[in-house]
Length: 65
Image (cartoon, rainbow, N blue to C red; front, side):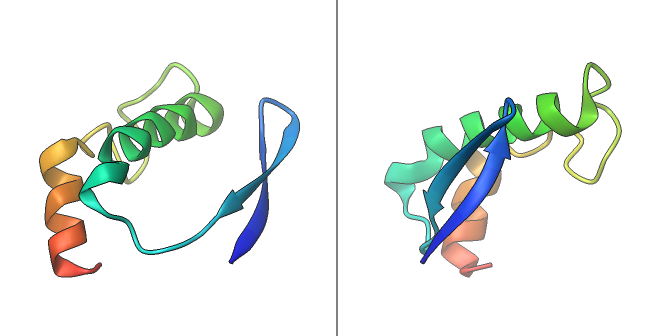
């Protein structure tokens, strides 16, 4: 499924599908962008708290969360 998102004031289309291990680097990058766009310089606030690393994404993929 394709959905529009706004990042850096630009509308982008993203494709939503189940993640695989090949997606982990992109997921980490997306997490950094999310933190920058929504939390600003305070990356300690919010439910992610900067804790989504490669191991976290591997567990989520394995658990199909």
